[in-house]
Length: 79
Image (cartoon, rainbow, N blue to C red; front, side, top):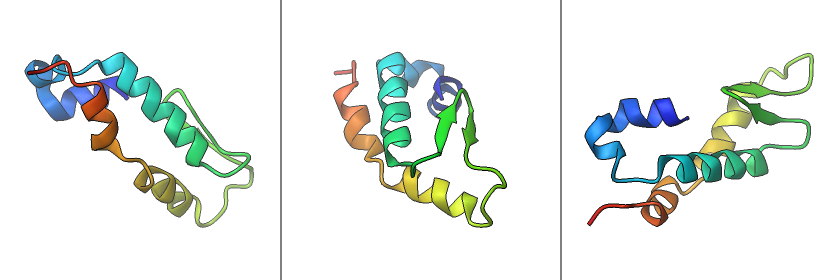
């Protein structure tokens, strides 16, 4: 997640945020939003096998439920 955020924001803007704290909270929120039997391990979603046909929808819903900018605001080191 940290690498993805840095690539989106660029090196200069990413220093305005506590990247480690934000990434940890995002991972925790994402895992909390996933249904039982699903988890984000490292950079890979893991779920029951065989993988459900609607697996991508499950992941999208879990991501969409996160208030990214609300979290980012908490970890803002900028002015």
